[in-house]
Length: 485
Ligand SMILES: [Zn+2]
Image 1 (cartoon, rainbow, N blue to C red):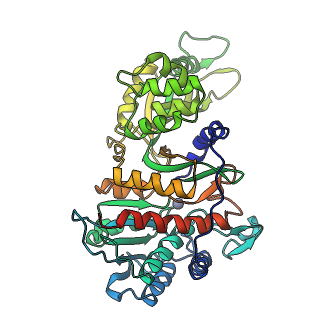
Image 2 (tube, rainbow, N blue to C red; image 1 turned 60 degrees about the vertical axis):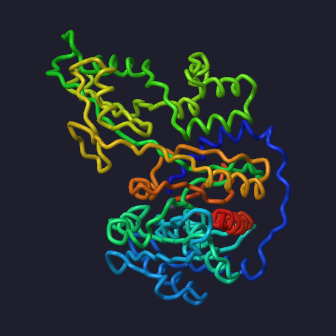
Image 3 (spheres, protein in one colour; image 1 turned 45 degrees about the vertical axis):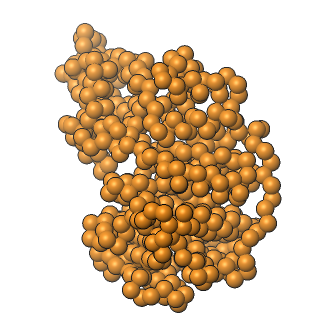
């Protein structure tokens, strides 16, 4: 799951806290039958182990398929399929009427079934038991993301039960190996059964979310783009020698001087549709100067003084530009010897639209010392002479139907908390669907306190009422998106 956004939001949250109007308590609109159904599906999913080591997504996929068939979905519209017996994916379709002013292609709803490993001895409760305690549901996957999977299935069954006919097909895909493993289900489905999941756009419940502080909603995040992660290894070698006879060239000084030049260098200011909207929508909750600065950087040309002031804040800075920072240092081999080697790791977060090789070239330019070798370190730790040339995908366009409907429904559910498009620093299954030309929006509908993000951690939990509000949110949102217009 791509959750590192929460820190991002913590800062936003702190600033919005004083300004956000108090959220009105809302009546719980869930009828008892739906509430029970949502509970049972969530419990069932948590208690099926879907870890890569010993679990099976097929068991979970089959269980959800069975529920849909029991609810009246024709067997031909519910399939479980995958590359092997343990990595099954479920795809189900609720047929639309095809009515409305335009012919709409389907909406695809994606969620991963697999969860990160969890050891009983590390947890207070059994991670594969669905435990309700102190107004929370505990269990591996309560945040990431069996809650979202359960919401998809509950919503489909609820719509079916009510005889609701969307104006277009709704497709749900519950998939394998987002967290790890060799059989990513979204990738596999796109390569092998594109027709089953082909859609106009995608909602991914594995992203976004409602940031709350002590239960009070501050912003509704929507993940609309991602930065690209890259590590670079800087190495200087030297014949070395006795430290009583220093030479003019010294590996440590070469590297240190280069790093000092990097420290003083900023990558260029650059906004995209998502970060522009982020500043536009965040400005409303900021102090007067900051708000003015945010408005001054989204004009053309941007106000350089405003850019400089906002750059002092790590959050705004990382939103406006690619960043590269030294994270590790290793040099020398003895106290009384000249260093034969000095090495540093530089970690970069690259704006969408740029490549890792482009940034490597930029580092070489900034370090400005031919003695400093700049190599790329890939995800498996291999050091390579050059970096990949594939650019991070440009941000998805903020479709008016997706955004306006989200603004409206989120406004009903979490009044006073604006919808804020965000740029995530992690990667989700959205990389596959976006690359396949299906714009993907990360929206979870689940409220989590900014200091209670436990995805991948111990004692993962989700507030009981947060879950049911998520169930209600997606019911309303999907209906609003698919009423014939
Ligand atoms: Zn996830």
